[in-house]
Image (cartoon, rainbow, N blue to C red; front, top):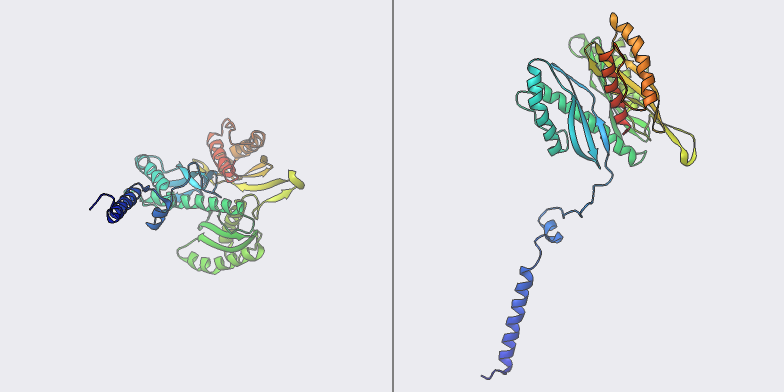
Length: 351
């Protein structure tokens, strides 16, 4: 057979084609987006691309009371992702110091990995872990509410109020707000045990209904449940105060492009050696226009210290426009608690 025979040329051409196909297949990138999706994996994000519609800034959860002290979590978020988790309050003193030092860093790391409140308790730190997760969930609720307000006034927000202590136990209210209206109200904590069980089961459903009907915290107390009603209303108001700009508790002042938004923000209660301190601020156009202590140490010597120091702290907060204010001489604990609660309130405004 001569070299130029037609059959030989056809065989050689076919072999060359097969070799070319094999070579092309071997050069196909392993990171091909189509193959990644087929394998059930998300295609790689473009460099520098960030998630959209997320929350930015610090969010402080409510203080969760445990058998050994309060636990309170603060999150720092960037585009909806948790970039830092820290406990601004944790049990201390005696054995608690060792447990806190060991467990809190591990809980912080777990939050960063999970990006939610579904984290495991740390062995040997059951109470601290439970309080941490509760405060963490509260912080996430606030972040969710803030994100909802950014997406439009009709978006549903879940807002959890601060715990209100009553003579018969704590009361804490969670509301769902959509389109500026309360669509659901529930008590996530209420007095229990003995006679309290009957009072709670009778009064709380009626308070829930009243909150939805009124759309605010101006509701009547339930007869025979004075303490529960008072605690409910206090926690409910705290929840509504946490509605971010554009939510149910904010009011617009002025008109046009220069319109300023007024927000009433209630900080978390800061526990001190002499009693809780809780601050409420009014912010207009990004500035503190009013500051007040809705809780402060009382009884005995504390009455005099509170009446002397709190007005000065209020003035300092308005003048500074932030929580970087000096402690009042002779009121070290009250000043520290005030500043902590004030920062918590400002965190809710993203400031």
